[in-house]
Amino acid sequence: MMKRHVWIGLGIIVLLVIGIGVWGYGYIRRVDGRSPAQWLAYADQASQQIAYHADGQSMTNGTRAQFLLDQGTDGHYVLTTRDAKGRLCSLGYDGSQVWYSTGAKQEKISVSRTSSVPVPEHARILGVATMAGRLVVRLSVTNGRLQKTMAIDRETGIVLAMATSVRRHLQSEMRVDRVEYRPVAVQPCTMECATREKAVNRATLAAHLGGKIVEPHWLPDGFMLTDTLLEPCGECGQPMGVLRYSDGMSAITLFEMSRHAMMCDMGEGCRQTGSAHALVANTNVGAIAVTVVGTVDATTLQKILEHLR
Image (cartoon, rainbow, N blue to C red; front, side, top):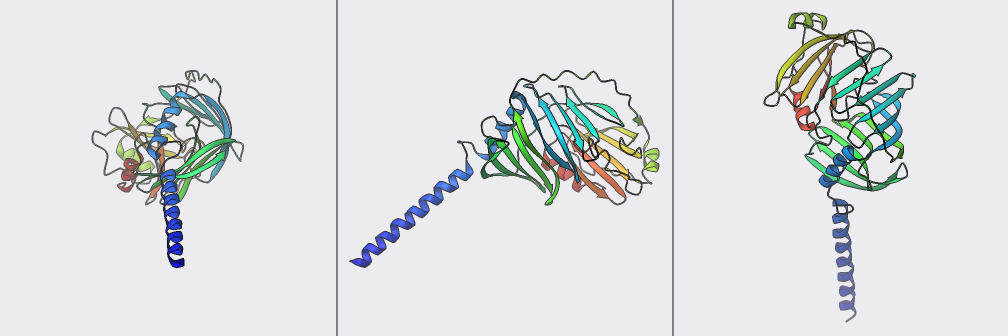
């Protein structure tokens, strides 16, 4: 009889463990009733509807900076960064143009609005935490060899932290230290920018890059080369090739420089940041350093990187 009670007790314990495990598994798959995909959609929606002011820290290509961000309810924003060397960079989006300004350069780029949170191949909830005094849900997002960890404000959907890695090597990270949800108005860009870009033929561009142009040997359907340009790097003044591709809606841009001539990271303060709606990746192809900026999803960007020659 005693053994029977022991077995019944053990059975109850096993059932409790299984029940707790099932509950925990269900919880980690959903927080506040949202799945990982629903949290990403919530964050994308928030980026177009929530106004706030934030300050925090960022790192891109090993360069760390402090930032101030004003974001409007229409997705327009102004971002100002200052790195450890005191260099300032202002970056903004006014609905039709991304613009930036450093001590060495000013530029405006026409862009099309695309989703800032592409659909991932794999996403999972890591848990919950507190950041900048706010309750957040932490997510892991994977697209090919691109991995992101994100912290999303559970109440508003605003992304308060994000780290991006390629092949497990950290490329960039951002963390909000303080956030205030309040009305923010971002005015249209009126900055007069003197462009130093000039159209060149392939032979001229190759000569400036040391005899070789790096090109994507695979592009999504409909993408065509629209511009072949030469411009001085905004940070060090060295010749930099710019190849622009578009399908009429989305855009992919390659910034190229001879590694032997490089004296900087091709505009580490701004160039690498891109816009809030663009993905950025860096690689070396032989003697050429390449930065790829694209308003495409991470899987497409990764495939382009793998087919650079």
